[in-house]
Length: 235
Image (tube, rainbow, N blue to C red; front, side, top):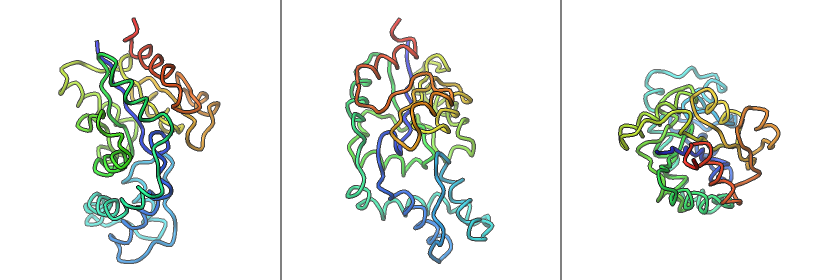
């Protein structure tokens, strides 16, 4: 038996200290040659969605060339902002302990499911030392599709190819902090653990359809028990 754990990144594993929105603004400037007037709207959207919306808020319909350069601009902007992220952000309480404990559960493999493009997701997690036990080869990223729920199947298929075991709703758990994260799991084919470490309360996450809800990641034994139960590994 095997279980796949997919972590959201921003406000679930890390707090970015506002650097994410600065990164979108910097990417906007790289794409257009002028500073952004409006702030990016994030809230569980994918990076390409965020950038297209930001361009349109400025009255710019993205050209094919700009769309093709979105990923490059975002990666460059994140690299330029890496030191700011290190200074102003932090890993959320319990995140490292949770990842470490799950890595010790036989059959569990862990990755991320995030709206970030892959290089930026890796950068955000590695800045705070959370990357060692996460397999980024099997994650689902904003560059993999416009619909967040579709990223679950992308991650499951990558994990199946690498580990030689099929992953489905009964063996996959998504952990996230927003109703969009919950919807991605529910619609995409995963059980969901909601953590109220972002703007949304436990009640909101439960109402959105999360199978289990925690206030944060600090109760490591309870989190591990929830993951093993939802993936069938506790049987």
